[in-house]
Length: 90
Image (cartoon, rainbow, N blue to C red):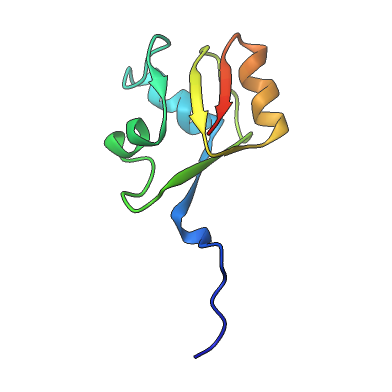
């Protein structure tokens, strides 16, 4: 009954650059570690039921991280690459 969208958007979490910086400041994430969905699930930033995460540009990142995300905004990608990081879309 009703309409069911073919793309389940509830399985995609949003992560901002300020969230990643806060984890780096708390020494939970480090620059030599790859950040992916499993890493973010283990620290509690992303829901356990999420299959992907969307990287958004709110805030500022000061640490060069290697990030594997499902989606990333152009501004977030430029912000990460501007500090020497790398974004891979999986």
